[in-house]
Amino acid sequence: MSGEAPKLTHFDAAGKAAMVDVGAKAETVRVATARARVVMQKATLDLIRAGDAKKGDVLGVARLAGIMAAKRTADLIPLCHPLPITSVSVDLTPTGDDAVEIAATVRTTGRTGVEMEALTAASVAALTVYDMVKAVDRGMRIEALRVVAKSGGKSGDFTQE
View 1 (tube, one colour):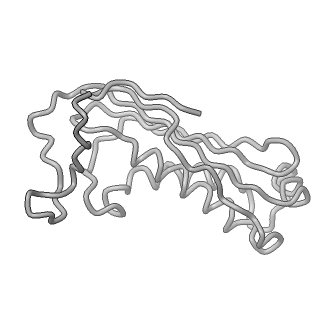
View 2 (tube, helix red, strand yellow):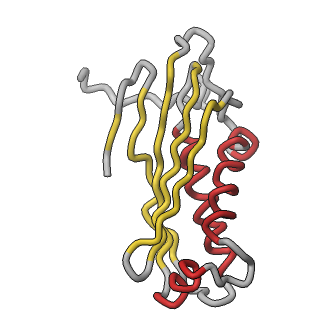
View 3 (cartoon, one colour):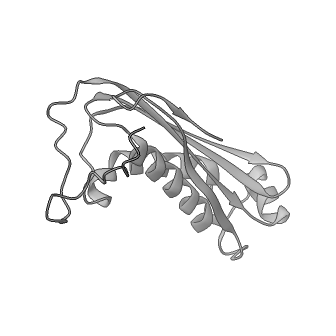
């Protein structure tokens, strides 16, 4: 490494916000996975597992919300490019006595990555879980939103847990 600080890509030479020009980048298969977790009371998770929440199938609705959110990321994040997403999967898994783990994976063939789409899918799925059962558990916490994997593009592969 040259010792130089990395340059932020979303600012022009004058320091104004700018959309990155990805026109010269190669089109490659790009995949990103983001995770989040919703921590709640045991009774709340029991309600979700049993399918007895007043508003319906919490995990099914949250899955659809996450998928829809990935497709709308460019409408929400000002400098994101609208991308031709080829697939989105959102998995919600009750774990232990008190949490729902969320994993969102987004894929495209394009000139820029899909990390923001994966993060948006995971966060909106988590928000939907919260919304659907907040009447019984206002103390829920949404935690650990992060990109855990990305592949494709010039910067190469990245993984973390």
